[in-house]
Amino acid sequence: MLIRKIDSCLLIIDVQERLAPAMNEPRRIIDGCARLLKGAGILGIPTLITEQYPKGLGPSLFDIREAAPETAIYFEKTNLSAVQENDFMDRLTSLGKKQVVIAGIEEHICVLQTAVELKEAGFDVFVVTDASGCRAPENEQAAIRRLTQEGIFTAGVEMVLFEWLRKAGSPEFKEIQNRLIK
Image (cartoon, rainbow, N blue to C red):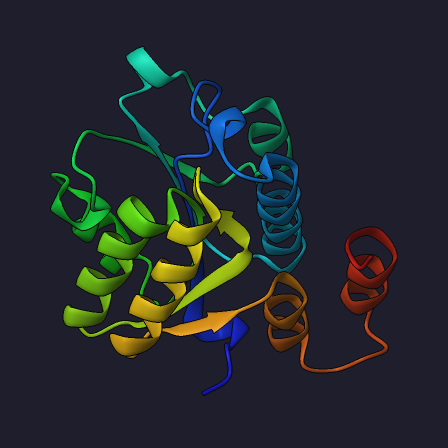
């Protein structure tokens, strides 16, 4: 199944000031999420950003806030799965999208639990593995295996961007190619 711009939204999970620096390869995660956010902004993809207990873990990193589209919806949470948070599912379903592209931290906890519960709720879920991560590499590997076992699709940042685009030659294609493709 391909990711379709018209059918999808982007969900960035918990890339926050006091949490992100503790991750294995934090710059890879932050840069990947920022590229997805910028691509979503260029293409008008609805975006949700969660923040796990921001009083203790701080807000989303500056890089994330700066890259986020102006229309991004920020959502505070204390549950590990965003699905369990009051009003989250109402907000998500109000977007009218059936595909959810997810990236963030920690991949084996909040990303995994949210992805599995969204799949159980009937969404097509894609976890962007090069924009997600954990403190320990072995947990990243375990998360990817588990996601696959649960029937959740995995993807890379460039896969998502080019599936959203589908066609070369448009002004959006050129902008994404010039600004976001490494």
